[in-house]
Length: 335
Ligand code: 2RA
Image (tube, rainbow, N blue to C red; front, side, top):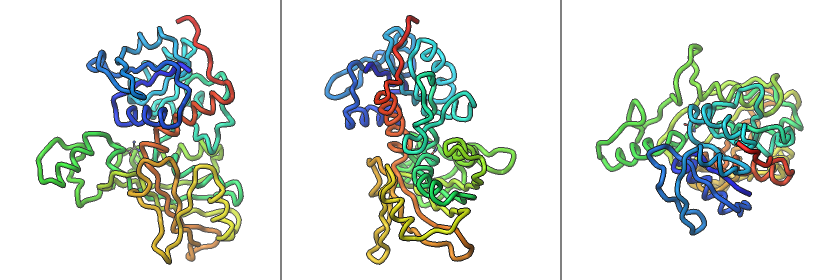
């Protein structure tokens, strides 16, 4: 499989290469694309050096699939050029997620909607991905009415500059600010920009993307997304109201048997999911599973996952794996 990675030098792009190698994705040829200033630089993949090329050069080489993590503007400009050449694009930006003509995919939830005609496929927001992986088995069984989610998101979700700000602050060193305030020893109830309804774009992504991925607009979602000084992954507190009652033992069994989910729930022995444990793993870890005793048919739980992996790179590679397994990755046509 000829694979292009667009945005190959960023946090997520680098993680995509790591995941492609770890999962032995059948890469016969690798084409790396990054910004103008990076063209000509070399990146190592599976012990071999690859020179970064321009998007135009990448299209000429006719990869079968192009995995993007290059920001929304770059994707809006370049993804259609790849798609017009018959190259299947899997895009990690928010550019295409709510486009009604594009599929928004979490393989454990809705990969079956994909067809060979899908040439630009959207990878959901990291905080949405881990939530729907956990919700899917419970929705199938008990029918979700409403989700109240509060997130505790890693600085890696912002990017390198935020990681550097946190590390500088921990060392007492002045440096560039990714955030409007200190992040060390602090939390920011502010991820992405505020919208006119008082929510942030991150919160609106979780609300809108969940309905699209689950294929059910009746699911009501409200979200508060918070940035915390953590590296290993995003954590989320979920309060989930169902149309039907549930049995806690059955909930645990459904989650334990769900693809991509690991239940870590033994509070008697202080076993629960934490970003330190989720770091660099592909699973969605669920714990603190308990009934909400304030209202019927309602569950509380805690969900943790590495936002750079399952929240971005791994989910995108899993989409490519699914497409390859179903022979849905198109052959590039003459550009
Ligand atoms: C964040 N989910 O955590 C957003 C984008 N990665 O900043």
